[in-house]
Length: 289
Image 1 (cartoon, one colour):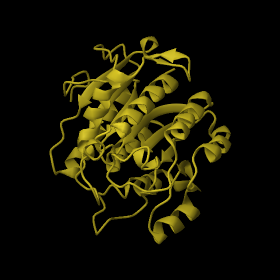
Image 2 (image 1 turned 30 degrees about the vertical axis):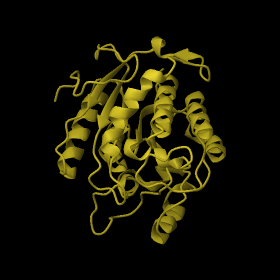
Image 3 (image 1 turned 180 degrees about the horizontal axis):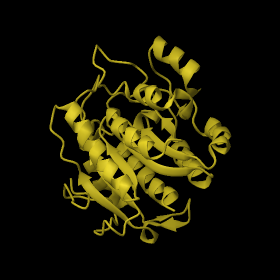
């Protein structure tokens, strides 16, 4: 698989054409084959890129500009529609190459199952990895309706791979009774809130490699209606940005990140896509050192 190839046309604002010189690589994972409610997140990566043209290059929060960093956007990976297992293999293979080249993977989803092969590859490179997870849902099921490959299972798979006490979950406000019991026993579990518990946790993660995965539905539907499984009672876009900035200003070593579950068809106002695009900008500026 070629890493320096652009697989689709549109790119995130100010992306470089020079893969070799880039410190980070944006890649899209247009898969939504296992969703349990509303499909459409396979169109999220492309639309998040398209609306990025409306962003300023400069972040007043971080006093940095996209002009100060170099990152490559591969576009959306070519995934075989309907074949979840093969799609996950392709994602994992691509991310393995990015990591081997010493670059930070920045993924755009797609349903949350796409994070699983990425976490697996990042963990293979960084065995002391910690995961920070922002989401409305715990994603800790072993299977959904008998299917272990589901957007309800990626964090359970990660916990079984690397140990649940290396996973920190924030903002969770939905899940089965069994998931909540599992989370309270096995995960560093901070339901309902994000920013305040995150601030307390970050010092204990100082010096560790961290992977951040954000499901856009951690936001309240009033901020992000464009997602497959909206859940009332979420945080604001302001709090999400502050949480990203808290990580960026901390002593953790962010080695990869993703933002998933944007489904543009459900948000004709484009609020969801615009919020997601700004969060991606802040992650690029905050995490690329």
